[in-house]
Length: 151
Image (cartoon, rainbow, N blue to C red; front, top):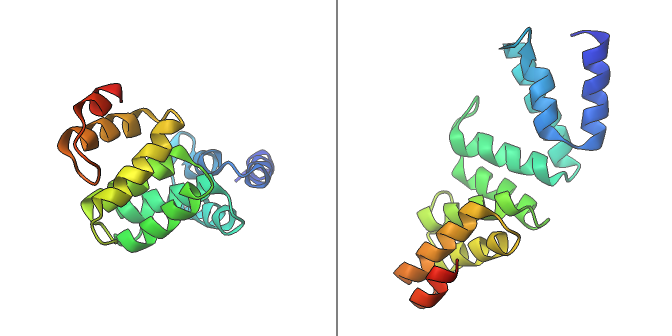
């Protein structure tokens, strides 16, 4: 890694933007490298442990997808919850989906609807779609077609 890339990595970590950290660390001449991916994961974990919501969500994505780690839905839910509690709308949506599917947590449609609502209220488009579907189907909320159309 060049001095420029190391400097950019340090600045990015301090700024708490895990996606940029992953980009900087995972590519070298436009191709992902094992070393770069490992560095990105370490940097992301450090940012997450410092309370960065984006990093928490990124780690949730990693554990949910099983990329470079075994699938661990319970750990994904834990990471998403930390980010969701910081009002991260995409993490709120992901947490709602995990509750809806019962992945790593007991299936709970009411809990899912609550997280979809929080994300939808912040403008998260997929949460708005899912919240409409939840109202249409009456999953975790009373069935309400007018509320479904609203979302």
